[in-house]
Image 1 (cartoon, rainbow, N blue to C red):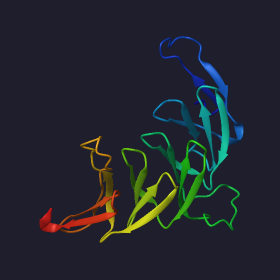
Image 2: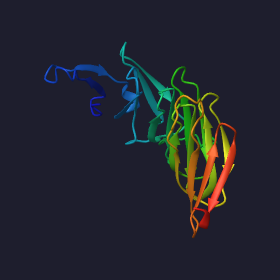
Image 3: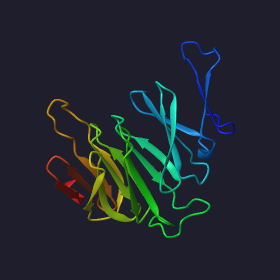
Amino acid sequence: VARGDQQLWVFDVAQPYATPKVIDLPVEGELGSLSYTPDGDQAILYTTATNTDRYASWDVATDTIELRSLVKPVSGISITPTGGTMLAFHTKTDVDDPDTTSPFYNNWALTMVNLDDFRSNPLKLPAKVDGYAHSTNGSRGYFIMKNEAFLEVLDYQTLLYEEIPLKSAPVYVGVLPDLDATDNDEPPAWVSQEHELGRITFYDSDDGSIETITGFEL
């Protein structure tokens, strides 16, 4: 991505010295970063360098680039392992001329975006996202916030979320490996937490069960 010229240069890796194809980008997007979906059919262009509340989708087959809106500037982008959903992590800082009546004004936020039809659900957050993980089948996501004793569970089909209370502040979040891809069970998510003796919580999205282990049980 040539940020200064607002161009996308596409190189053929089989012919690295051939002249690249150059695609003009929307100037108002100030785009400078790119993330592909796993299948390579689509990519997301965005910027973390300026207070821009825009991103663009690039259809690789047709070279169609469409600029799209977000509620706030972006601090990072993550695409699920299946490529069906995108998470846009937002800065607390607003655009240069913000709408001060917006519920997201001067707040942390995160937006879920369906990459098939670009439906989105922005979430106002009480604190900065401190860690996140995707389920292996791309159906759910998980994130934790700094000094907030909750595990946030994202449903990528409905774009809704559930808040799971924790017994202490979270430190790291992840998803256990899928040891049997044929059993249709989703591996549990885990959250390690602050505790003088050690603490970890497991969340099973298949039945909604929660198990916390503290201290000597570890």
